[in-house]
Length: 397
Image: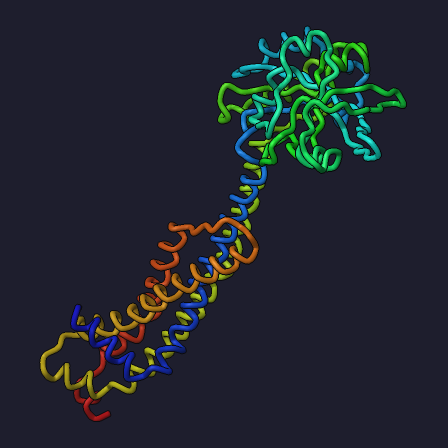
């Protein structure tokens, strides 16, 4: 078989143009599969990177979902009693965080930034892994006394304080035409931050919100922190069932988790990659048909060689093996070139698009094995035809 393999490459060298045309379909097919799977994997990684590593253990419950009308339905109240009930009805909850949102216009000098401010409990930013560029987080006493302090995102800080050094400065916040003065105590570092924004975010103590802005302990949004991110999907299901049972209707709240969103997006990109890879694999089959045609021509051209080998005692199996090895060698060579070309194209495209470079090694292996299988499958018929040639007729040409 090793001699057949060496002879095959000698024959390739004699007919370079024919060999190249035979390889072309296999190279294109394998390279296409590699590029498509690589782009799908890199897109998935880019989605994950854009969300960041923080927040994967959080499930968000927000009031005001799409409600199906039910006569017995009751409106949800995210108060302290509701917080306590969560631990009894939803499994694997580590901690429950309450927060509220309020429209803010933040001003310093002649510059004003309009955005939504988030009223949070102490420790929430630390839990979300939102790092401070400089300054300090809210303390428990800030929340208890309703301190008029604010932590701002990097873009907000650069807009209000282009010269830097925002901490310690006083800013004016206006909400519902009511002005409040705040002291900037921290500036967030720009980073991928999951459900929270480290660039445009404005954060105030929830104690101030419930005492001065809306005198109520009720929250707009609940964040359930899971014991482990792997429980988030199950927690979404449990929370949905619990909310429906408590309110008497489905869709009374919006429930989502970042992990679930990432899983759904990854599933979509994976499905598209598989579909497109299947389409690209068709070119491998087309290349296999081309190889079959070439091998038929090769058998016809080498009838005398086959006749001489049979006259010297070569068995039909040896003749069949010779042409099968030659057919498989073409696709083996095409598979190797296709993988190298696919990796190169993937690297160039992902570099230009700014995506993380990601190669699917299983896809490379499957594409390579499939290309060799195509060569054996489509080369079998010409090889069998060669093995059945009568030596006298073959020598006669």
